[in-house]
Image 1 (cartoon, rainbow, N blue to C red):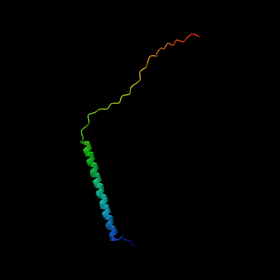
Image 2 (image 1 turned 90 degrees about the vertical axis):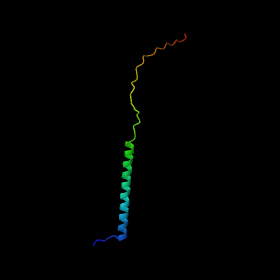
Image 3 (image 1 turned 90 degrees about the horizontal axis):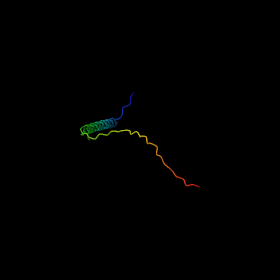
Length: 70
């Protein structure tokens, strides 16, 4: 013999299930609206380029040092 939940508990479960479904629908609509607004925004027109600079070689610098005689 199976035990059935009281009528009030079953009704509360149904109400909560409808609330959860409603929240999921509102969330999905919000995400879709956000994506649509983001897709329709105009591009900013800026272009970013990344370039690696290779250091050049420097010629050795000649330094002349004069030491005093002892």
